Length: 523
Image 1 (cartoon, rainbow, N blue to C red):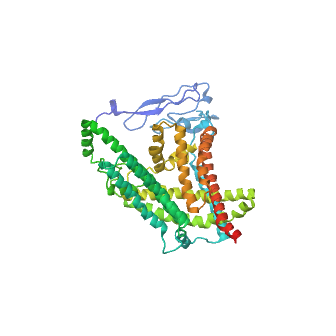
Image 2 (cartoon, one colour):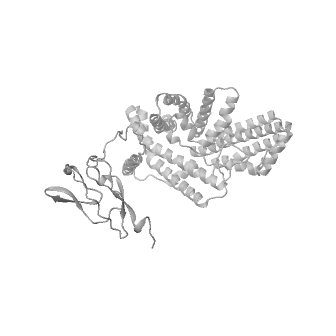
Image 3 (cartoon, helix red, strand yellow):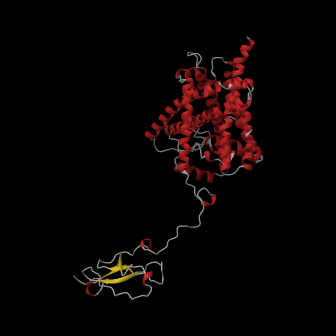
């Protein structure tokens, strides 16, 4: 074959040359030597003698095996072909590599280290073990208290009387009434003032009618009352949004009539995108899609998903079934005995025992609350959204990273937050209110509905839920003023873990005194 890479067919290979005796531990330099066609390297020229031979270290074409020459350790020549790659400095004796450098400990904030996944796993393991011990202790002390039949009795006193379900069905009357008012407003048969009056009467009836039934009808249970009042509260918020959006559409249509050219462009654009425009949205199909969709804010054109994912829907339905049973079991087995044992310390006003009961109730209450959050905001709402092909699935944000109370309330319940922002907070700002007044108004409205959903079913008005919600205003200021970063997040978690069981014990104690001790004392 022809020559390659030079005369005589010789090839060039890289070898590491012997480090200089003057350099000591310097890095090995590369040397290029000619290699014959046979692959054997020619004998290297003899190295010059050095008086300080003892300090040299052999490398390069000499084998690294150590032999003795007159009592000295020196290199031994070899005919083995040279190495194709240079020797690593780590393999060369006499080459020093630093093992220390300027750095911070991992737990120091200046280190920039943030991977604490192992510690998080440890916390989860410790949480599971500690709760397993509490659950085992509960079983040993009380036995199995889970009774599915008892759950049915919470909704029904009389199997032939279903007042809560009847209230849910009657809610359709108010929805149809709001729809008919909007139809006549769109046709010009009603003035805006008359339409506003009819909407106010309809919305007030939505809140007052089920409350009167829950207070006056003895056959309805507290749990059934909560269910019926929750449905009517959601309907109230939805119809407020329905009325506001249609009003905005009428105002825009009135402005568009003054500018026919721009109106024509918008109409053509809407037709090209196959979107619904006002008043074509005023149909029963559109109304009930909105009433069943997992949102409180009305739009003429909701984002839609392309198809129903059957596997995704099946997983959500299985989660709903399993987590429902888990919540019922934890309430019956863990919370109810703890609450029952808390009545005597409250009656005796034994503050140390009250605090102990409070802390003992905080663990199951918070665990059930977390399960409820996942069950409702992820499993249930995603299942409904998947069935209805509702595209906007942002039902919550990362509230668990909240470093302030305000951030928590803005991110844990996105449908309610969007409604408050769109139909309460911003309208107040447009009317000239300050941000503080508007925020206080939002908390006031939230406090009203919390008390509405608790006091009416229990047939007592203690304002614990109302006070707890209004207390969020100074609490938000305190946390944002004195706690930052991780300390703020810890403060938010502490208020969630301790605040809820305080309200639970207050209501349970008052309900117990009102319904059990008062009749006995009267007898």
